[in-house]
Image 1 (spheres, rainbow, N blue to C red):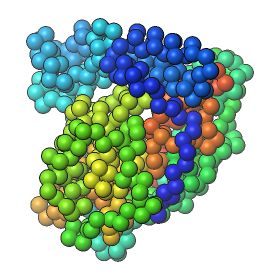
Image 2: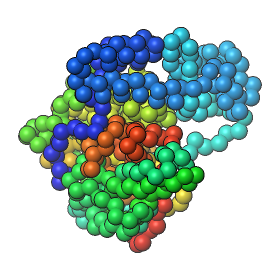
Image 3: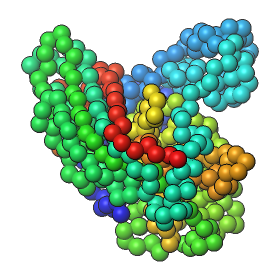
Length: 475
């Protein structure tokens, strides 16, 4: 079983003053800046309060990196695929909430990914494209032989972890040349896999460049390998990490009639609780839950209903999580979300219904050239224990001759083509960062800083390479 201990938070920004957080969420940046300056000038301000205020100022900077497009610029991007787009069409889609934007100090700015997200959110817009190209979902988002083999093997053997395959992975973080002054020490944390029985194990560190990477203890909930090296003038600073591990698909054939409400032990209790700011049982979430769940009492069938409801919320590229003050609430009202946003919404709804639920995330890949960072979760179903859930992959579509239970493969199952770095969100690194992270919720791309401060994502890039050593027997 996974470690359930919840350590104290560190190296993560404390919550900001609610009034200032609300001002920023409402786009009143000038007023928020003035309020922050006034608060920072107060004598005897506690260090934690100062850090919270400074992060809210940083949050505005990050929002402005995500929201850069004027209406004309957004239209120009859409016209690359819909050349005859009319202003009236744009206005109608905008009014329907299909083009994410913020009004910041009276100026309407569109999210950088709003034009491309439009085609995922609107069938009308999708069909208006001059060239009908696929939207590029991952290979395991459609029912395939890997799912079928995992399901069959689990039924035949009684084991939940099946189809082992051995993989060698190299992760790279490349910091822009001169992002840090020459001679200064650049510090990097690269995500590193956790050992999880039945899911991934036999992890072997192979090499790092620079040498001497410090791998966090096995029980670190957001695990990383730490490296540092001096910056050189005019040259990018490159960090590389190579490791091997064995991955398994998971399949838990669940009989709904055998599922009973879990006894909430001290170990399970944290996973049915609210955890501000991103898991909060708001009035709107309670109303949504009541509408979806109705009078259902069986925990598995409740989970099915909630899974299906969140699955209906379309995937769309997301703004940076650190810019969002409450991710589950945001996702409910935005009407779209990426994998982490959908997962946090589902976890909140499950916990609201007394079903223990927790986070997991990392990186997914394929037999071909597809890979991506990804978030999913787990829920606790008595008498089965913790089982995976990936609401972004959602319900699969069985074909004639398939076992109909494959529809719910991702409610209790997981493909093997993913590596988990994190068994919780917003947890501290070992060693701890000195400055607030670029990603305050997840940990997949890495983190970089120097003594002058954190280096945000616009100052560096990341990359994954992988090689199969043996396995991939899906037949």
